[in-house]
Structure formats: structure tokens, C-alpha cells
Length: 546
Ligand code: VG1
Ligand code: CO
Image (cartoon, rainbow, N blue to C red; front, top):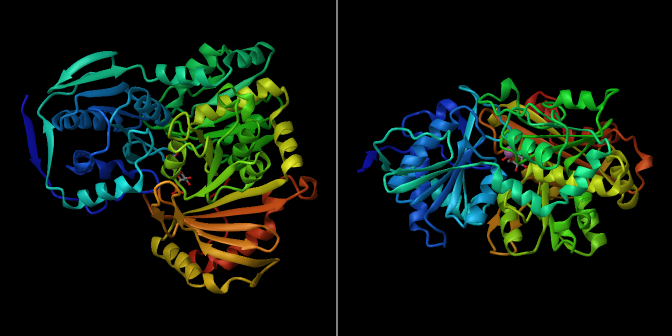
């Protein structure tokens, strides 16, 4: 089968953001758009001498355009000389499952098709991300050359062949490559069984424990059905909205109190189960709830770290932990008590990769409902849910008892993130630039009830390879130990989103209202005043509070 060389012209907008290239479906359907980006990846890999085989893992979250994109990528990968292409049945693979497969089979890497928590459909969002041989999102040392290549690309390679069926397991030849359609769930489910005490969790359910897992019609449905219902034996119906749909059933596959509101309502109702959880479009995020109780992601990371030795895989303890800059310092307090290192990294999972590879950390997480460990190199939604289930099976306390007990022991980092969406991009940029311009003069300034102690623009130097990342968000520290941070989102496809991260430490949790918005009211005012939010954006109410 002859390789075709197709002439193309570059697109100027293929710079990867926080998590790969995210654009709308119509953007991706422009002739050559997907092809240019994929060929840019392959050209950089061809020039790159890092180890890795001739095998590539390919899969996505099942959203609209998933399968068409995979057919294009399969032909291009074969034309570019890959020998083995592992694809999930129907083109389905969760992001953590791709990471698991790359590591288990030692492949050259993988391609994930997803726009994660962004809505799908013909007018919705799509995305593509390359994962390196360690299983993790490509670091900037790879994404920058890919972007540079995309600016000058003038040809791509493909085959003139029909689509191949992805519906049945097995192998098909494709122009010198073997396409292997695999069960998307099996390897991942085996990995989970090797980490957690599934028998203890089965026993919990046998004693009447009730749970709701909401897959939000995204990719985790089949994974949760297999692990929670079949292997653990939770009652049928524990996993809801389990069928992955191209438009996520019209929903917004973002597990937070706004987009998973029905779950919050159920957990506040009279017949609430003991535990509830949800995951996002591509299965790497998690939301954890108990009856009348929502666990913030920052607290969740701290609780997992403090209870890690209850889990078989982490029984020997943790090497260290890491959190992204905007994430609360709750886990820092646990690390201090355990006498282990705690790293603060820029937003985005790619920054945890070196710390995990180098054995410096075992657990890490972000405030955006992402938690993970060294078992893969992505955040992992279902893993976090199983971690909580394992803790609950061992401690036999409620979710709220565990978190309130944690606060009493370590103090509470009261936390919230406020998102202002759909802003004019220029106005949002000016707001950030104005803040940056005054960083040197902020110390000592009184803003409302709060006096500023220090402020900076977060810059990171990777302790393993020395690479640097500048301008990762503005941090403002106050005299009482509170902190606010300001960042623009790097995952959206329309307008700008300003994220305001608010954190206040209280040694005694009983001295503040349990509701974070109430406990943070004064800080919220000061944070908005300091950045002159109203002047730049005309806004004072966020679209989403998490
Ligand atoms: C958001 C989150 C960030 C996360 C990223 C990818 O990025 O804030 O913590 O790593 O999404 O998550 P941003 O730039 O919009 O703040 V996923 O689940 O979309 O891959
Ligand atoms: Co995601």
C-alpha cells in the first residue's frame, strides 16, 4: 500500500495549552487541521532520539468526532512507519487508561483525543494530546517543538485506504502496521486491583453501604461498571449515566457542584447514599461527596495523603507529595507532619511527570478535581474514588467525619475557586498585566480587611531537569496567612476565563462557618478589589464557584 504525501499549509493557532491542543469541532474539521498537528507530532518524534518502540496507543473519550479523528490518525501513523497501533474498542480509552497502556506495553507514547470537561457535539469542543513513553502528557520540551513544527509544516503522510472496523477485538493489517483493537477496560481494571484492597471494599458493600457513581455519559461508565459493580460487587445501578455518548447526553461533563448539581441535590436529600462520586469527559477528574457534605479537591488530596498507608500499594508510606500552585496548602501540612517533601508546581499534569519519574513524589493533585499517583502519569478519577472507598472500608466512618477529623488534626485551609467565564480576552489580559505591573509595590498595602505580606508571579524551576516555566499565575499572600491567586485558563476555546483562587487557614475549624463562601467573604471582597475586577470586566459574580 503506497504512502501518500499530501501538500498542506500551516495553521498559526496550534499552540498546545494547559493540556494539549483544544479547539472547537469545526476548527478541527478544517481540511488539514488535524493532519497538520498529528504530522507535527510524528515529525518531532522522528527527529527525537529518546527510547521507545514502534507502538502507539490511540484512544479518546468517545465525544463527537472521536472515531473519525482516530481513523485519520491510524492511516497517518501507519504511513509514518509505526508498526503497532493499539486502539480501544470503538476508539474509547480514558486518559488514565492510555497512560496505563503506554507504561504496561512500553510504547513510543500515545495520542489522547479529548477536550476533557468541555462540552462535546458538532459545535462543541475537541482536543488532541500526545503522551510520552512515561505515560504522561508531553512536557514543554516536546510541545514547543511540535508547535514550532506546526508553523512550517508543508506535507503530511497518509494512506489511501478505507476505514477499519473498531467494533470488534482483534488485529487488522494497515499498510505495514498492525492495528490491534483492545478491550479498553481490562488492563486498567487489573492495575486498580493491584493497588487497592477490593475485598475490603466488597465487604463494605456487603454490609449495606450505598454509593452513587455518576459517569455523566462520559468515558468512565464502562470502567466503573467493571470495577465497582462487577469486580467489587456493588449493586447494579450504583453506576449511573454509564453509557458514553458523543454529546454526553447534552450535559457538561465537568464534575463540580454546578455541572453535577443533581448529585449534590441527591446527597442533600433524605435518601442520600453513603458516598457519591463523579468523573469528567475523559475520566481523569473526580468529585467526592458524602451525605450533606462536599469534599474540596484540595482537602481530598490532603486526606488521601494522610490515609495512604491504609492502601496496600502505599502501605510503606509516601516518598513525597506535590500540588499545583493554585491548590490549597492542606497537603503541605500533612507532608510536614509526615516529614516528607512537598512540591508546588504550575497548573497542568505535565509538571508532575519528572517528580514522579524521579521517585520524589508518590501522590499529587490539583484543585480542579484532579488527583493521582505514581501508578500512571495522568490524574485518575476512578483511582481517586477507589482510594476513598478503600479508606471508608478501613475506617468505617462517614466522609464528613473523616474530613472534619482531618481539619481538627491539621487545621483547615478554607478554599474556593471562582471562575469568571466568557470574558473579553483583551480586558482579561489587561487585568493580569495591571496586577503584574504593581507586584513590587503590593507588600504592606491594606485591601479591605486584609494586609498584603508579599506578592509574586509564580515561576517554576523543575528540580529534576532544570527546565523553567514563567508567568504561571499571580500569588498574593496576606499577613494572616490567607492567599489569593489569579490565573487565566489555558483550556478554553472561546473568550477568556479568569480564575480566582481563594484560601484562608484556620487552626481551629470551629471558629469559622463551615460554608467556605461565608468563611471567605472578606477575602473575596479584597481579592476583587485588588484586581479591579469590576473595572476591567464589569463582573462581580463568578459563573462557577468550586
Ligand atoms: C484546567 C485546570 C487544570 C487542569 C486542566 C486540564 O486548566 O484548572 O488544573 O490541569 O484544566 O484538566 P485551566 O488552564 O483551564 O485552568 V483536564 O481534566 O481538562 O485534562
Ligand atoms: Co479531564
